[in-house]
Image (cartoon, rainbow, N blue to C red; front, side, top):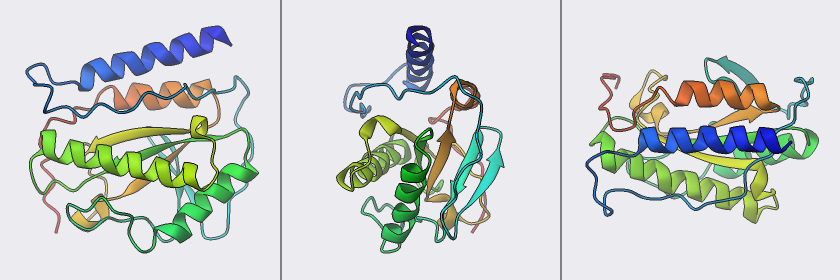
Length: 197
């Protein structure tokens, strides 16, 4: 178990080093609060309980718990959208029924505005707010990892749909390695070339 925690900590450190700008000043960088590491099991993936109106979407970074409705932010907003309670209830039910699973809460932005530091910092605040919402509803903070990604993953057809939360399912060490490997290749400072509406 200590070996797994060491590997996890090392991967997070490498990602943090890659995503920190080389020529930034302290005012440019929002530092996320440190939390206890999320424990991942060495067990293989199990069949998951899915709440009503949810599904799983396979991606290169792992399995995404798709809520319905999705949580979509208004332009430059960090406050929870009106539809978020129903979606967060689905996430909470998923975590309560799948005690072996944790989630990575990704916060995304559209590419309106400057990628770094503006959009990245916007996603940092969204990620913190999402985790706070879940923990205020009783979710163990050690089961949620914040992952602010700014405009680095433009995988939806409209600008509105890009301003979203994604919930990546982590059941075991392989899931964590897959996620960290994918994310380590992203650069949150790079302007997205996405041209959707």
